[in-house]
Length: 261
Image 1 (cartoon, rainbow, N blue to C red):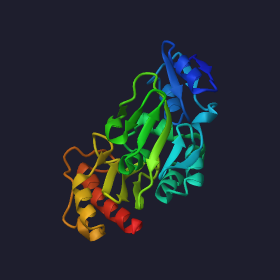
Image 2: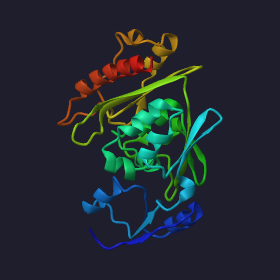
Image 3: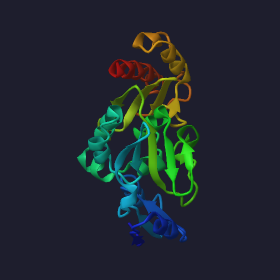
Image 4: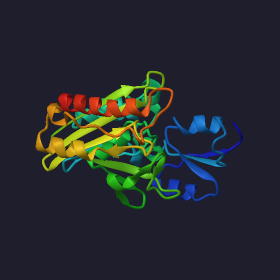
């Protein structure tokens, strides 16, 4: 590690001001940033910790949606998002207890790891990412591996997640990291079905529109028979080939539909 300063604002306004400093970087739960600093892949001169901002924590229901503060740990989402069982279950299976008690939903969405779980939930649910400056629809927010629509110094203050009629998340875990080798979130709304896939594509989280059309017409695992995603563009590494991940997408989607009932 190297020398840097840490500031711990207690309001969003103070955090935004602190992030205006040269080479300042926001620190959420630190589950990604701290290892990155240890490997010297980033070298901010100031870390702006968001953990002391109470207005960015908590889960509440509002007009048929869950509103979750950006600084809310995964463990809190798992315990308090009972109005959206599929989301609570997803949060309860992220990493291990240490990760779930430190990592935050805002940090996960801001980092947008290609194998993270929350991006699939946000995209499948048609969530709105609320920042200190604006509101961003999930369909516009995710822009590629570790890439989002966030501007420099912009903070995710909350996430508004509509609660569907039915939903489920199925994840094929990489056993060491517990990240998704492939994860699929399926959400059925009155006006159709949304399917989001994480862990599989070189472009990051994506919607499987062919599956959405089939499931909107017939919400059953059998409706997916014969459907598949192309192996081209799928991640291929020591954990699995692109063809294997493409196969898993179809398998995990069927499992998610079955689990959603």
